[in-house]
Image (cartoon, rainbow, N blue to C red; front, side, top):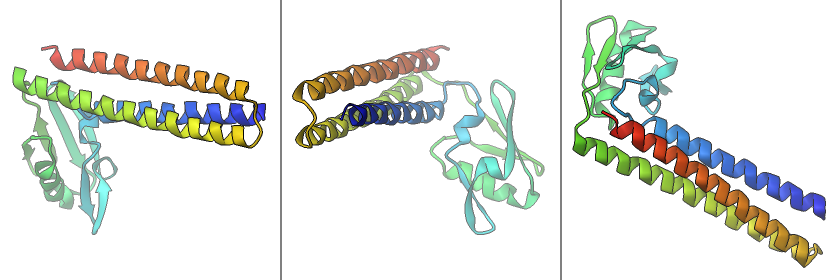
Length: 187
């Protein structure tokens, strides 16, 4: 039974780690005034009738801190890329020069920075909810093990461990948010 409890705890750590990774990934899409290729991660382009991630049809780089350059591997999809960026919620205006697309990243206003912090906080809260849901599922699995014959003491101990793991991952999310907030609010 102890081995099964250990497996459940390992599963909890793994699932919570994935929640933190996902939240970090979502936060990386929130721009902080600097041009980053990851800002375009959620954009898909119609490529031969199939929605394809932008990074799979073009090279994306940042020649400077305020510009993203997108060079498609096939010129015939320049217009599709341009449309996809305009239709995204990034609020950027692509400049198509016939060979590649340039995105000029405007400086953020104080109001926009505050909105981005709210968006980041919302993403972190979603991550915390996800971690708490994992805790609930793991505690349910532990109760099931108790019904199958695990001792009450070992289950109580495991539940305490799950709470410690949960607290540590929520603390990680708080640190990630603090860094992102600092990054966004830095002019």
